[in-house]
Amino acid sequence: MAYSKVVSTYKKSGDYTDLKLHISSPKDRREDRPVILFFHGAGFSNNKVNASQFQHQAAHFNSLGMVAICAEYRPFEREGLFSPIDSLLNAKSAIRWVREKADELGVDPKLHHAIYI
Image (cartoon, rainbow, N blue to C red; front, side):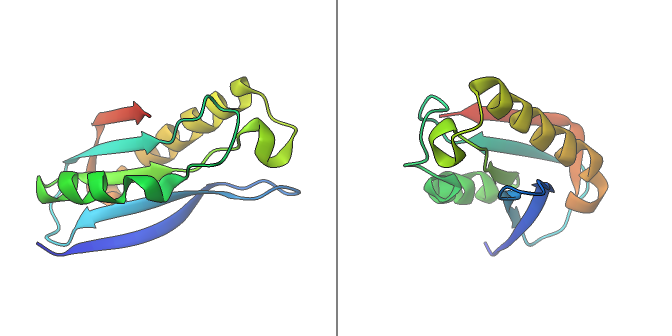
């Protein structure tokens, strides 16, 4: 099965790095597909892992007909100014962005799963 991959900005931040979503979708376009969001772990304290670590899981969920999205967020060590609360707010922004873009993504805005690893 073929997949399409897109990177989209979900949160702009003037002085800091814009936050992106790495979106992987099955190429056979359907409406109201389920979607899964991955957030990398590390206790919100470092950026030694990143969204690309989920590429194999994304491919697996794509093979099941799901859209897989790997989210970036700002851990404290990356820019030194953000708390775990800021990171959670970024996660909420990512989920909100997916719901707002549900039609464009071909996903059901109510049928989503978030995984924090």
